[in-house]
Amino acid sequence: MSISRRTFLFQSAAVGSSVALLSLSNAQAAAPMVSESDPQAKAVNYVADAKKSTKAKPGQACSNCALYQGGSAKAGGCAIFPGKQVAGSGWCSAWAKKPA
Image (cartoon, rainbow, N blue to C red; front, side):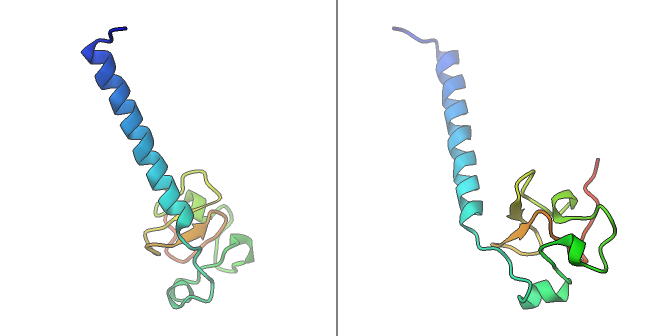
């Protein structure tokens, strides 16, 4: 069976992209969750549930913040807490509306 160079390159790129995405998702999954008692979390009033914050406005949550790196996942990375994950339902005072 003979495959064209174009097919080979396309399939190689697809496999490479899949491996890179899998590595990224595994790295994020291995990152610990930030604790509300963490000094940095306290500094920005982080809570794992935005509904428990008296400062969060309705509709604000980590999952719709511009700094949230988790996409639609229940937890993901945040630029404020490198190497740690935040709850998608969480909130902190650094919340910024995700661009449309």
